Length: 279
Ligand SMILES: [Zn+2]
Image 1 (tube, rainbow, N blue to C red):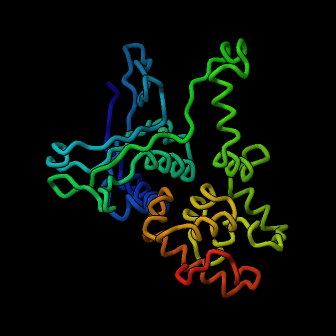
Image 2 (cartoon, helix red, strand yellow):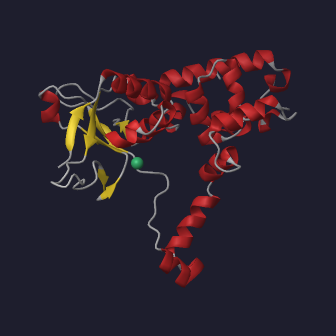
């Protein structure tokens, strides 16, 4: 059993900021997150007896779990994130935010069939677990032996060919550089395509959409064309904004404001498809 301590207010503030930036639905239901920092116990020789944080038996940077009803009654939060203290100390704030974003992505409020948040007998939100978009086990030996017949290669190909992966990789190439580096270089020599459908969603940042929402929508849609196409197909805004992971109603409102502002300022975009009068 590792040694746990309750994280300081700074860490908890960072969790709440990350939730507000990227996880509208969790923020909207005022999710309370407890945060623990873990360090491994040392043996008599001062050697760690095991990893501080494990997932499926393997060392990892952090894990999240839903707090039980009984523990909530005793005063605990709704979710609990446990972080490897050594990892935390070795990474800067942006990396920490990325880790917290990952952990928070593993939970969404549980909704009933009318879209209302389900609650426990304390009135606190219930949650559903969200699995990774991509996850697979890779045995190099099996992959080498069977090539494209192996599940290893099959799954890798599905991942590489998927739109979500492509959206991400196109934005991070070359060399998986941080998004902000790629972005500042892009804006330095930026020439926008004449067809607004090819514009990156970053453009909405110029019209007041937060960095968090821009990143989230970019990962989901990639271009303004795809985004507007999806909005145009939506039967109703409430359903659309729930289908976009992490957006939430406040995020949706911010998006429609940014789109309206972009319409006013950019003639090329003014007649964008998807106009039902309410977007
Ligand atoms: Zn994960």
